[in-house]
Length: 320
Image (cartoon, rainbow, N blue to C red; front, side, top):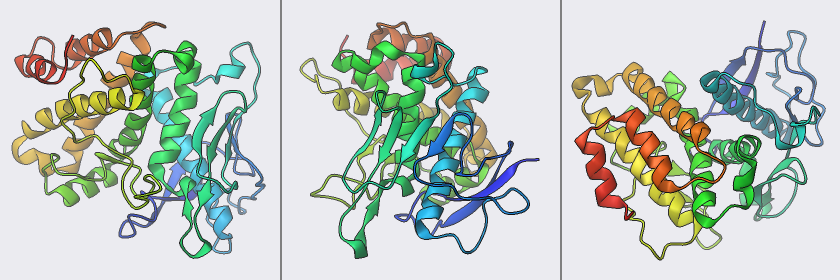
């Protein structure tokens, strides 16, 4: 028997989507928590059936339940695809300390900290219009993915800008994988785009409503871009934007080959999961000291083989 709980479908900046009930395939401890993750400062009790669905939860408690649910889904998806358990960096020698989400701090941080064994998802702004990072599915997925990648590739934490850009892209992809792993969310993407993934949409936009201070209602990044990597781009976020733009374009090109089937949620779900699995395996196979050229060659061979379209995409966007 599993555990049911409430989560935001995408967060308050997509009010038309609202919340939904998910069922996790495991029993969840009070908190909510389990052996891998915990939410700091909460000890919420499940109801008699072991679910977190009560109508009298406070707003803060709903935030904690939602945050736990997204973290759990991201971890479960990674473990399902790779076939191995997630092991946090600090547990590699047999320890069992969980990753802790800290969602009660006032500030503007959304980050992962190896030293604190935590992800920080702050809240900021005036009380009547306060932004809560933890309510964004994208940000929760992104920061959880940082912890996953740190356990998988610990040297990347302090790598060069190219490597750190690959890490940022891995974490942005986690938010996209989360959408593509659920048929109801695939249906929402198709409805929003009318089958044209080249338009900005919830799949391509990262962190809607959590942009920079001067543009707080905007998205942080956009995968539907045409960024070309130039030799003088040494900022990790330039690398991130270029990587997500290229790999998102690869998804779009194959999606458009589906013809009328592209309006079927099942078709996007199947294609999206194939794309996500290849991206994840590309990261797993990368060495401790990777290069973008090696990473993209791994992806190209597993996604398109020697397909000329992928070669063209690489030629258009990259300067090796």
